[in-house]
Length: 167
Image (cartoon, rainbow, N blue to C red; front, side, top):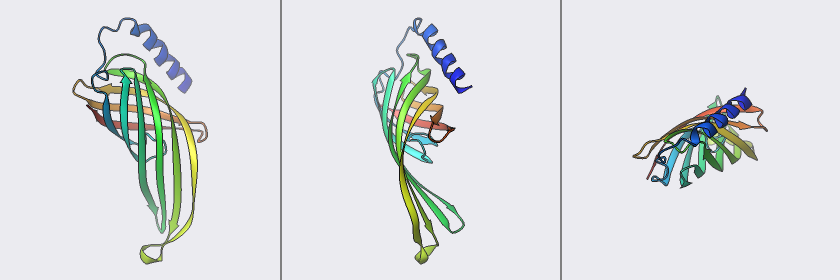
C-alpha cells in the first residue's frame, strides 16, 4: 500500500510538473525552523529543526529532540539528533514530497523518584528512514506538513505533523 501511494504521488507529480507556471514560495523563503510532532528527526517525540531550501524543490534540515516518558517509577529519556532531506515533487506551494533521513537516538532508563533515582541502562542506535507526505509553505513563510516516516529497522511507519516558519 505504501509503495503504491508513493508511486501514485510520483506519477501525478511528473504529469503535472511540465504545466507548472509559477515557482513555489520555497524559492523566496530559504531559511527557517520547524517543530515536528513524532517527526524529524525520527524517534523524536517533539523535534526542533533548522532548515534550508537550496532550491525550491529541496529542503535540507538538522534537528534535535529530548523528551521523557514516565510510567510508574520508570523514566525513559529519549534524546535524538539527526538530519534529513526532502525532495518536493512539484514546484508549487502545496506539494507532495519524498525524502531520506538519519536519526541517532539514545535511550536512557532510570528507576525511582526524587533522591533515590538510579540508572538502569542506556543505549544508542542509528536509524535511517524514508519520508513521504504533503508540504505547504505560504508566500509569507508559514510551513505545514503531514507525512509518514518509515524505517526498515523498526518494521513500522509513523505519522507526523510539522509546523514551521521560513524567512
